[in-house]
Image (cartoon, rainbow, N blue to C red; front, side, top):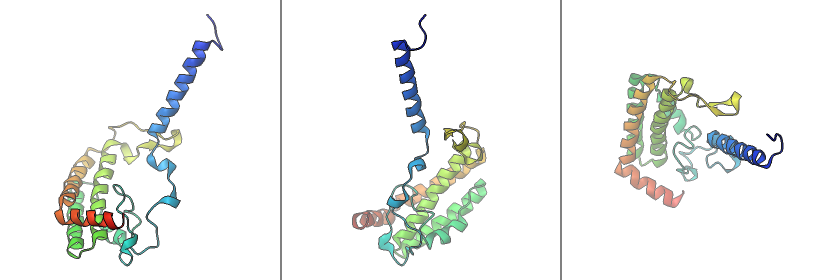
Length: 184
């Protein structure tokens, strides 16, 4: 049998190497290629005083940057247990409705994002031990799923219910559509 540079073996090795690089690119976290220069939210801006600077963005983007809202909401954000998640989600949802009543879309949107983040972080901890999805010491390979804390799954469902309730709020939906049309 031929070894070394046989054309079929060379093609197979190239195909396998290509598949491996595509596979590792798919498993890398989205944050691996983060470009801070193009990020819409900037620290140092008071988004209550300068709401026109706020962008809705996708998902939870900007939630841990936009002050003073981050400092108002974050102390209430907890998901270690179902009881803590219930208290946290209720409090944040009350803040969400208070922001809406004050016609403060930015505050309402960030409260909604904290509810969403409560869901996603709880799910991450439910799925992966220690909440770590990627192994930074092993080329960002995925950790084994299903090794997490089942209590966090309960927390996730609590946050999900409040998040979906916030998203379904008609006043919020109208403000969001108007905001995205004006500012993005």
